[in-house]
Amino acid sequence: MKVLLGVAAAALLMGAPAMAQTDAGAANTSCAAVAPPPTLPDGATATYEQMEAANTAYSAWFESNRAALECRRVEVEAVEARRQALLTAYNGGVDQLNATKTSWEAEVEEFNARAPQQQRRDPRSIHRQR
Image (cartoon, rainbow, N blue to C red; front, top):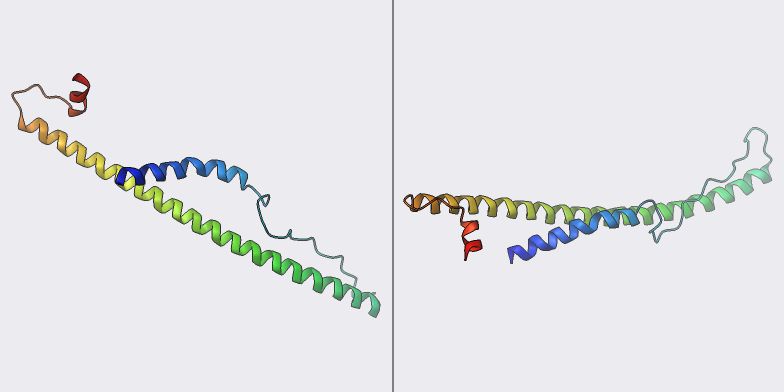
């Protein structure tokens, strides 16, 4: 079971660079694009009608961009949650790898200490000689 977790973590990590390449920029977003701001009139010289039209354009721009940015915020939070899950899986795999390596080295030392009259061998090589 532990090996399966390590393999799964490795598979996720190998897929992450490819995923990062396809997610570059805002190409893979389901959110509306953030629009450039409207041209604002010069308040010192604009007429009432120009200010009223600009206010209407500004309000529409503001609301659409606020909605687009809220959508992006939700996407960023989802990406961060995925990043955290990948990091947790990676760290678990590293811990498992290191613990197993340490246990293996202890078993090799114990094996070698038990049979000093025999030629000291690395047990990893024993299975290759059969």
